[in-house]
Length: 137
Length: 93
Image (cartoon, rainbow over all chains, first blue to last red; front, side, top):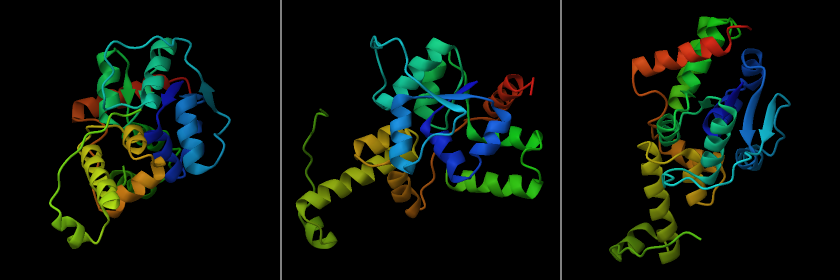
């Protein structure tokens, strides 16, 4: 299981790879705040394999970076609570997560794994997707 | 409520851009936020929040200017570490 932020969730949605990601990751989690951003953005429901979870802990962090949003912080809380890595391409979120001992994964690693697992079947498809991701990350 | 600050810009910008003071303020904020996001100094969610935009609207503004986002792993070692992690997480699949 993995926690998804909006940068990765939206990138895979744009690339039409969410169903393929599900073949790699059985379940993923997002927070209510990320769900609100995502549903406002795409006006769609979230796939069933992505759970919307509310963190139990509401106490404030001592110093939250100003570079992060409320939705980003909700993911940090979830990651600490569930002891799961966060999939994100956002550098400030990745840095803060790692400061707190949370592992991070970017879209490129997920994409490479999709190809290595033959979920993305051809090298051409992999490279095209990779290029699209790099151009519009 | 976000605290606001006042900045001064040359009045000529109104004539040059054809914008009103209000629109110039919004445009200036957009340019600042796009720049901060491109440099990887704020998250996507934060950028959209600061502009009171949907994430996809913000990304549309970003890409139409052909900007590049500094994101993801910062080194080959970091990329490899992330790939190793996803390998371990999916080892039973």
